[in-house]
Amino acid sequence: MCLTAYSQDIDFHITDHFLQGKTFIKIKQDFYDPYVWALTDHNGVYRINVVTKAVDDLTADFAAFGNLKFIDIAGRSKDTVFHSIQKRRC
Image (cartoon, rainbow, N blue to C red):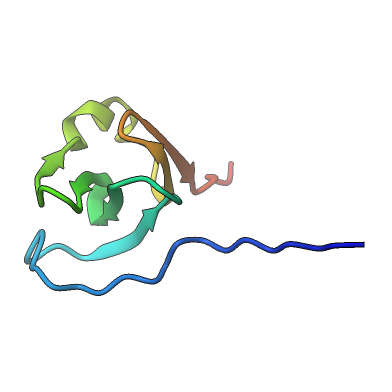
């Protein structure tokens, strides 16, 4: 019997400054993906290419969900991101 465990790719070093003045809620990077996804306060969504250091502000793309509060983010690739929302009580 062989068990293999995989963990989230969290072995990184911050060597540059990105999104100064923002309050980060979550930062995620998938295995083998050169993109880091960042969730900031007020539903800010950013994609950072760790190779080119390019920062894409995708907040406007998610503005239609402004009535929901994003609490988690996970990216699968450059063009695929998942959000978790905080459930509102009735």
